[in-house]
Image (cartoon, rainbow, N blue to C red; front, side, top):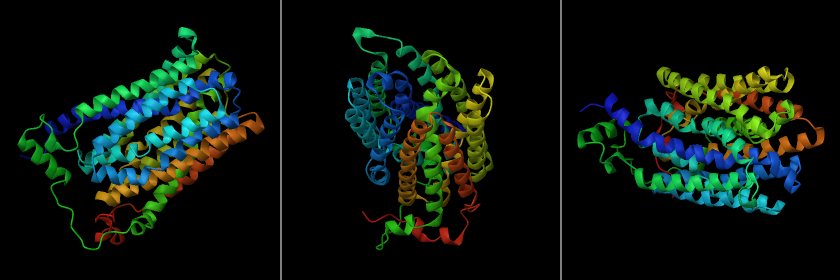
Length: 436
């Protein structure tokens, strides 16, 4: 039996909805602090610098498990790794509802990152066990669509919860508690329904399993070389270094924007907290649409560099106009939409890049390194945004930082080779396991 569209549809139907939900609750728990900050910062006396530093601490905790997380998911069980992460981060996310001091905020942000570390590499490893290379950008895009979707519903949910006062508990505390418990519930669902391999499911028959595994290439045994690949030989590769540095630069703009977009929008518009949450739903819903279109076209053309670079360039333009263009409601929504679309629509194409040049544990370790370096940018971006905003009283300098970072990152992406058919990348070194 040959691999067919019917098999593909079954895999999409049974795998992607759960992973999509997992990323929705992941990013809700990661960035709900931006909406909570609309009232939390005033109540707890947090300055912009304190808020930015605390928001960025998530990334410091997160990066600790990035590389080992990817390799553990490949060697152990991607499903169990994902489930463990989700339940742990949900519990910690809910604990933000009892924060009263700066040190508690800092500690929980670090622990939340530590709990969630390795989630993205684990999911990418999981997807590589279920989708052929030519389908990976689209599959990744469906997963990553949870990111802007979470921002869209996150704004609406925040608009509702920030106004409540149930049992005398402030709305921003309920925001953390409810969204943390959502992650625990989705983690339990994932534990029940996800499987590590097509061989483990009942919704594919034996012929369909063989056809899918053949297409993915999982049926091929990894060569048992007596000389295992050393970490430095992959992590010293110029391709991985350039992709990792580009992710660092994206992290500066992406996380700076996402953690401060609610506060920035309120400052620029003068709208109420509820109106800000509802307004931000518009650009992020549109970002979901453009993410899918960009990833679909990337798979269709089997091209990753330009589909990533054009997205980042659009994000830089949107941010520049957000900082220095007119700010009446129509233009504010327009600039936010261009920025949100540009900062989010690249994910499917971008995360297909490592699999273009590497395979197996080499790809898993490379993904871990890329995400690790990106999360350093995820600390630098929010912290520098808070620092610059605290001293200038406005977001202009922070936005300029985001734009410059994105433009340099775009140039790095375009500097990558056009094809994996390069002699330096086709030797055995990129395809054998790491030392354990």
